[in-house]
Structures are given as structure tokens and as C-alpha cells.
Amino acid sequence: ESPRPSDSSWPVLAVEAPAIGLDCEGVRLGRFGRICVVQLAASDGRLFVLDALRPGVVEALQPLLESRAVAKVVHDCREDSAALFQQHGIRLRAVFDTQAAETVLLRHAGKTPHQVSFSELLRNRLQVEDPPDIAEVKTMMVEDARLWSRRPLNALLLRYVLHGVDRLQALRGVLLQEAEQVGGAALVEDIASASERSTDYCLLNQEFPTAASMAKIGTRLWAYVAAKTTQGMYFKLNAGRVGCVTTPSALSRFSDVELGDAVLCCVSGVSINGTYLFLDRYDPDWDYFDHQLRPSSDREVGAYGREHRYRTSVAGEDGADPLLVRGLPALELAEAVDAWEAGYEDLGLPAALDER
Image 1 (spheres, rainbow, N blue to C red):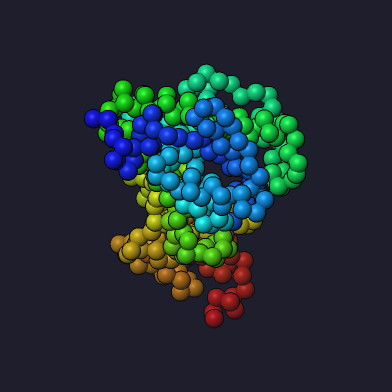
Image 2 (cartoon, rainbow, N blue to C red; image 1 turned 90 degrees about the vertical axis):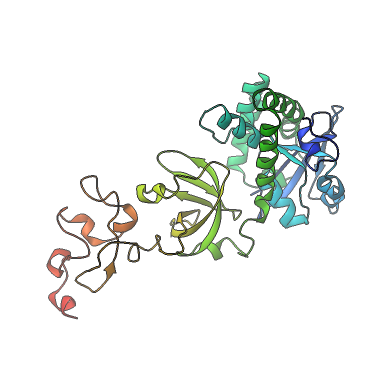
């Protein structure tokens, strides 16, 4: 059965419903960044570029962006949603996220889902290739972090921002058509739900006032799955930081997690520059982030009285869990030496230290 106007999700699911294409550019776009440019694409083909740095411009869009009667078509709305909510108090509603929709369709087809880029989606769904200008602007964005805050915007940058919205509504039509053909109303509803979860990203980890406040070992937080491979997982945290899981034992605890899920985690480490937070699955009974407090069938106490209760699942011939042994002096010793059982002579320490 086709969705009807009385349904709250009708604008998102029905091609004939009112809709606009939406995209934002900015400096560190997201919760702690700044929106600099807003682009809109109307159903009649008109394109608009708005200077978000001018007072009141973004706020004037609030009735439209919060309206449940008009679908907002966005590619990966997460950071746009976070920036609008945190900086301007605008809660995006009735969003059709083309990246989320493609993920749902890939999973339904039995394929491994991934974070498809806008360029890839245009190429695969509309047979449209990026013009050469796009790569040039992306290079400029890497070299100049404040590119979008500079005024005036030249013709090259204007072409880039318009390219980001002018085919969003066409993509929505193609994705909805395929969903209806291969999965019917149920699959279309799945796309609406996935798009809503992407929009709700703006609410993630609001209890942390700054990115630094969550970058502490043992901190419990929510993490949104952005990428998953056999070698690692990467998460968006709504904090200007990237969460990652890379150790085999930790990865095993995320085996039931899919792309787009929100997972309760704890911080197990922080990269030297603070950009990456190493995560593990939160467990109410065990502190997996602490190698001394992991579960084990028997207790063991090392030469210096430090207790550890867990033998990692990857310990043995293949080597030890990196989180278990990182930073220990015994890493440079023979494999037969246990870092926890090593004596002062193994570590090259004076005997007096061992007697304390």
C-alpha cells in the first residue's frame, strides 16, 4: 500500500510529495564547527546558494527545515544535522538521506554495505561523472581548512556547491523506485527509518560539553557505526573525533553490529594527537577497556602485585592482544617472558626496586 498524506513519513517516502535538496559546507562542519554555506535545490530546478555567515540567514530557514510536510533530500545528513541543531537550534525533520537509502538497498541485495560517496552514487545511479572541478576543490579544502569561510566565493567554489544539490531529487526518485520494486512498502519504510537515525545523530553524546571531555579512558559514550571491515571498525561520535576498534578481541564483541547502528561503548585509549578514540563494547559486568579488569576463569598476580583476570582470545602463537601488552617493557623480551611475571633482571631494573 502506498503511503498517504496522513502518514508522518509521507513526504520522505512519496516521490510526488513536496521536497527540496539540501547541502551545507563549513569549517569543521559538525557540532563544534561552523556552517558557512547552505545550498537548496527546488523541485522546479531552481538552485539557491545562501551565505550562512550573514546573521539571520540560517534562522530564516527554520520553518522549512523543521517542516514535516516537505522532504529534505540530503546525502549523509549527520554532520549537517548536528551543525544546524547545535549552532542554530534547528532540528531537521522529514529527511531522505540518499547515503542511508543506498545502505538499506545494498543490505537487502545481500551485498556488503558501505558509506557510499555522493560521487559514487551519482555514477552508479544516474551515470553522472564528477566534473574535473570537483577534485580541484577537494584538494583546496584539504589545504585550506577555512576555505568556506572566506568571501567572496569564486566561480569554481560556486560550481562545486551547486553540483552537490542539483541532482539530489533525481537520486531520491531512483532509490525510491528501486526500493518499491525489490522490497515493496516494507523496504521503503526501512529507508525512512534509516534516514531518521541519521538525522538523530545530532543528539548523540550531548552530555559532553567538549570533545576533550570524552577523551578519557573508561568514559562511556554512544558511537555511530560509519565503517566496518574485518580489520577494524570506525565510528562517528558527534564530537569532532573519530572512534575506532582495531584489536581482534574487541572486534569480536561488535560482531552483531551493522553499519548505521548506534552502540554503547567505552574509551579504551586515545591517540597521541587526540584525533582518534579507541573504543571497546560497553559491558555492565566487565571493564574490557582495562586489561587488569577483564574476565578470566582464574586470577593471576604479577611480581609487582598487579592483578589481571583475562587471557586474551588472540594470545598464543599469533601474538598478544595489543591493548593487553602495549607499553610494557617485556614487549622487547623473549616471547616466553610474561610481562606480568617478569622479574627485575628481565626488565633491567635494580634489585632494590623488586624488593619494595
